[in-house]
Image (tube, rainbow, N blue to C red):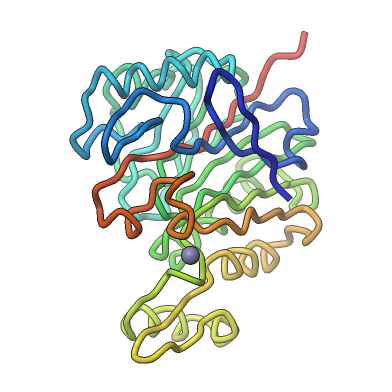
Length: 271
Ligand SMILES: [Zn+2]
């Protein structure tokens, strides 16, 4: 279903249906291959949890070399559990990585420009990778439970179809590692938010004692299919970050003391 690549001691996850496209670079990082220590061990990209800045910068340099992307070409979201998506171009390169951002509350990025590497941050919340292979447009979204309830995947597809004339049947989607239905346990308030929105979500929520377990992967899939994405074009890693803290950082699995992984996508110029 998904494939791990190991290069320069960096281990990252890829989606074969995206890898087929040679003009596209994409990755979801694991904990492995960086220089950070302790709860950040080792490939941490989170600036705000207390890791040393120099280590995070080194980690970015290691990943840049591994993926053959320039650090200066990266642009990173500023996530606040919204469904806001920003279109970025050459002028945004470096923002959130090598220089300050001039935007906030952005949980999804989209671009049609080559050599603009878009990045979102994750440590349990679902990464969604989008690629329109006809129009050559990439999108990345951070879809935790709030983003899923606000249908950030639908917002991404709206942008692709309205602003770029994408056809849903040409869009490939990868659902990356994140907290699974095994571990994503919530109280009734969150259960109510989902079930008040759509009865069909009931089938993806299981009651366990006084708590509820929500399958956000399946809910995201349902939203994608509702918006015309073909089942065969959706690949879900089905990997729970909390069950796999040896490979992934997990906010819940490490009780908040954790590093941050990133999703990365970039279009290449194939000349
Ligand atoms: Zn789990």
